[in-house]
Image 1 (tube, rainbow over the protein chains, first blue to last red):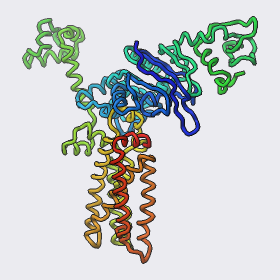
Image 2 (image 1 turned 180 degrees about the vertical axis):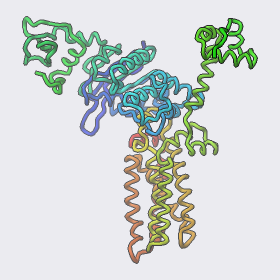
Image 3 (image 1 turned 180 degrees about the horizontal axis):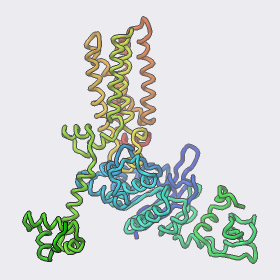
Image 4 (image 1 turned 60 degrees about the vertical axis):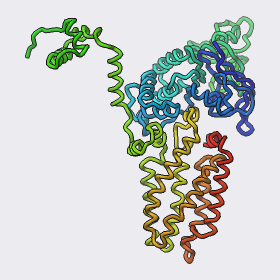
Length: 289
Length: 276
């Protein structure tokens, strides 16, 4: 287990707005999940890790190289797979051609070997049968998998995936989790999500990001423990809770500082996540304190 | 029709798999195999799996191998390797629609040069914009929906831009130069617009280090048309675009832009990537 991504004090500003405000991150072999609300800085961070965006300040090393230096950057890009949030392809290309195009840019120059590699990654994501279908005829979920296929080209040591489960139906999501868990063996996968189930299912390490900073780093089990003793159920909604929502037949599930004699329950990753984000987290959830 | 119950034995299966059976027996075995599951099962262990995989991969290679466009085949024939041809062809400005559009615009401008008053001025105003627009469209997010993925690959963005620029300029210049030969008036008109075309194209690349390529091209196009379209006004010189002051300004822009690009050649790739 070596550290493949080392970031300390990363700063990135767009005008006056700080997308990253001194973020720390250390990732090693395995799957690291970035959990955070929209606008937390996840995409900015992943774009920086994918060498697409330079930082304004802070220390960053990827696979032992400095991505701000041209040679270092090229070394990183040779061992990197990146699925951006809006993975687009020429709509007139077939699935095969779309991946083949990226493969050329990834320096797979020998035609036959490149084509074999393109077929390998298409099979991996279950798109082997639609290789000759045009991108414009593929469903949203298929295009998402096509994006993943190009990221897997050349079995990269560092895989950066921005919200890879968006647009996938439950079955595809299951399949996808298997794929990511598999990919996490012997390489570093960093993915962002706002699905706590994704984290529980595939991540060996989770980082909670909010306001451009990391507020928690640890295993999913450790994350859940953050909320230990701070989750309770009650028949009525408690206005003092950080977040509270109705579950099952009339019970309310609460996160926050429990009143005396409250009926405590085992915390989940979601409870801890909401607790870490504070009252702001539930703002869009309807029934909140 | 009924068939006699006849099946493969180990020896026959081995010889069939090894390819040492005669043509007649092979045909007969094959006919039988399509209908008999137990004989297929018997044959399975005799089959050389890696060889079968290789055969299957060859079949897929034939079936799935991208059908190459006319442009890609043409490039390959002129000595460009197939990987490079693919990158060039991925730019929309190199697609058939673009080439057709350019040719059409030039043809219309050529007709205008014959029939309209000062029509040659329209030709001289539009022709230099064609290669520039092609270059602006050949690179960056406007042209490549996969640009975010492309940016994370080790391929040099400068090389990509240079490749596409070269091909766009070549494919646009050909019809424009051809049309120029048919312009009424001095044969000098057929080549003189090349200077503004070059100045606008190189100027666009230089400006693209600061703003997005399509914005750079739009800004220069507006500036150019503001000057050159004045030739269409009555009692104006239709050859305004080829007048000495205009050509002088074009030369200055060309030299300045080239010098700038040369001076920034080391970090040019990064500058262009950030605006694109």
